[in-house]
Image (cartoon, rainbow, N blue to C red; front, top):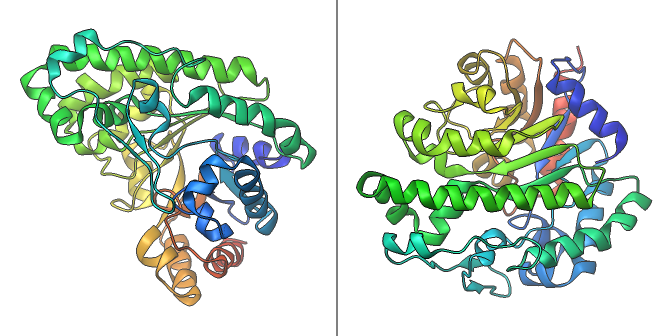
Amino acid sequence: MTDSQWDKLVAVINGEIRRPLETGFIIDSPWLPNWYGAEIGEYFWNQDVWFDANCRAVETFPECFFLPGFWVEFGMCTEPSAFGSKCRFPANEFPHAEKVITDISQVKDLFEPNPATDGLLPFALSRMKWARPRMEGKGHKIRFSVSRGPLNIASFLMGTTEFLMAMKTDPELVHCLLAKITSFLRKWHDLQRQSFDSIEGIFLLDDIVGFIGREDFLEFGMPYLKELYSVDAKVKFFHNDAPCEQSIACYPDIGINLYNPGIQCSVSSLREMSSGKLAILGNIPPRDVLANGSPGEVVLAVKSLISGTSDKSGWIMSCGGGVPPGVSSENIKAFIDATRFASAC
């Protein structure tokens, strides 16, 4: 993000009503490589392709926030790889991290990785360092420390079904696992912040919090997320595009101040459930409208969302979740233009 974009983002989070509304999207490997014209695998292993793809996005849509901005990631493999997950990288498919825990008892012996040396993390950090002067030469800076969330990582290490079942059958061992992952994540975020003095935000993505009820969230989700968000940062950004009704009221207490939801709830209801304490990045349908709809259908969805939302403070127009595969430049332009015209007054 540029300095101007960062200042605007912070202003929105602080409750300022922008006229017209700002637009922003989470972009990463599900969308960016193929939109750019590269295979997904090439995007991961060729840093020039990765950098050029991100440059093309910010230069094609300079009025739009792309979050977290020049994101160095290896799909869902980044953090699990540090725990020893075998990672598979098909040429033009999403990578996959294989389970390392086949029995919950193995949690006791699971080592806590060193983010400076283990898995793909050193490669991610190296790419960030390589990219930094090139980004800054184009007016952009590294603004966020980024990771998947603790429950999300646990689900890859164990398997989603196995992890959710273990919450009921072996809660003490689940806490042991989450404590190890959270300790590792704190060190990973600390390393990113120590390496780049331009970082003033933290970004976590964890859809698994949407798969559990309120009581389980309070026990297994909230304490670990709160620990991770207990840092000095202007922007504390969270993504969960699974259902959030059981957890969103807790997000401000966790420290979150910017939330990217799914499409299960309206922007107005999200603001109400969070007592107006969250800025929202959302939320037209990402797949059915932004990816599969025509530009005209995108425009209609944007106009309907804006006209149906009375309180426009703390709001950045986006889709519900990250940008999915197959979204065209024409649809993004239609989204940006429709937002500008529909929210100008």
